[in-house]
Every structure is written in C-alpha cells, then in structure tokens.
Length: 282
Image (cartoon, rainbow, N blue to C red; front, side):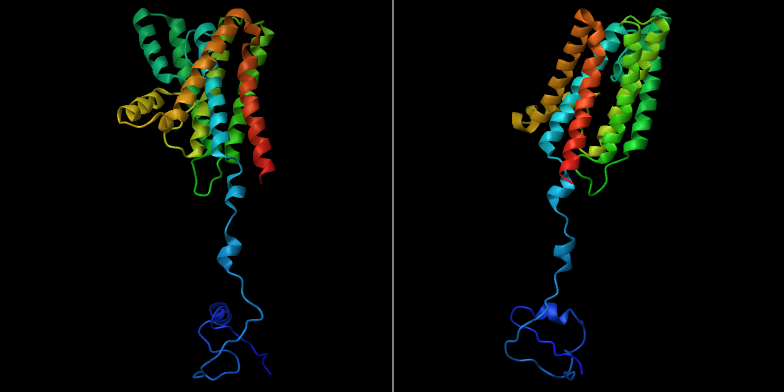
C-alpha cells in the first residue's frame, strides 16, 4: 500500500505537487479532485534559497577597504617612480608615456645611458604587465571584491621589490652604473605586474600607476557638473601618488638607505591586510 500524502492547497500545494510533477497524488485516479484544507507533513525546501550564496561571504572585503589598499598601492607607485627618476638613471618605473618621451629626447641628444634607462624600463614594464596578466587574469562574474589572484600577483611584485631592496642595501644606496640599471628595470617590472594585476578588480578606469587617464576623467566629470563625491576615490588615488613621490624623493635626499623600506613596507602592508581580511570573512 502506498503511504498517503496530504497537501495544503492554500499554502503548500505547489511544494507537495513538486514531489511528483505532472502526476496525480498517490492513490487518486487521474480525474480526482482534492477539496478542503489539508496539511503538508514534509514540505520540500526551495532549491533557490538553499543555493543562493551569502553576499557577505562572497565579497570577503568591503569596497571601502579595497579603496584604501588601492591608495596605498598608488603611494608605492609614486615613491618608486620618484626613486627611479632621481636616483636610478633618470627614467620612470611606471609612467611609460614619460619614458617614451625621454627615449626620444635621448635619441636627439645622443645620450646613450638615458636611452638604455628609458628603453630598458619600457621593456621591463611590458614584461611585468604580461606576467601580472598571466597570474591575475581578467575579471570574472562572481569575483569577490578582492580576488585571491590579486594577492598572488602582488606577492610576486613583493619578491621583485625585495630583490631590488637587497641590491640597494648591499651598496649602501649608491649602486654602480650597471647595478643602477638592473635595479631600475627590476622596479619597472614590479610596477608592470602591479598595473595588470589590479585590472582583475574589473573596475573601469581603475589604475595605481599610469594616472593621466584618471586625472582626465576627474576633470571631465567636474566639468560636466558632477560633485566631488563622484570623483573622491580617484582624487584619493592621485593624492596617494603625489604623497608617495614626495616621500620617496625625500628619503633619497635625507636617508637613502631607508628608501626601499617605504616601498616594501607599503606593499607588504597591503598584502597582509588583504590576506587577513579575506581569510577572516570566508
């Protein structure tokens, strides 16, 4: 004998009929009609409610915290560019537009050392961008606010910056001509990795290195009548770049041995916060 199944046509009918879609209730003929209130003894849970992910668990980190970590990366970029420009051959480590101009100037002035510095930095940066893109990949649907691949890319960048720091410290902040080029190219490769890694966030226009486009967007939005609230995130990043450049150049002047501490410290702090927060909120 089949066990009787009762359904509540007022509240649970759809769940009960879902037990056997397209067929009559057990023990009833095809033409039978159920009347009167009955109860359901074993409602079927909705699959949609069971499978729906917790937004907070998926996110892992707030966008506000990510914004401040991005600003810290901009501080790192500003410091690194300033150090490269002032102390390591006169070329940029992330502003490749500037390096293209410097390379053109070196061609007309027949300055071979400047041509090597600017051209080599461009090549090293491009290699870094490629490596970072391979590690972090592109933004994907369902990505958390801070994907794990971003942390992995920044760890590789940290390895390069640590290598640069060791070379800097071994020479007391006064590397020879050859090592100067090597350290410059190492920093350019590191910022190339950072440049492509942050693209995994999938935020349109977000950058922590080349910021001419960011500045252009800020001015255009303000000219179009947008308020400061609309552009405050971009302004924070731009300010971080300037603060980092001032700090990096200042350390070269007063305490050159400490210059890598600023760069490595900023990046290590970003990675540590990202690891702690994403693990805690999993």
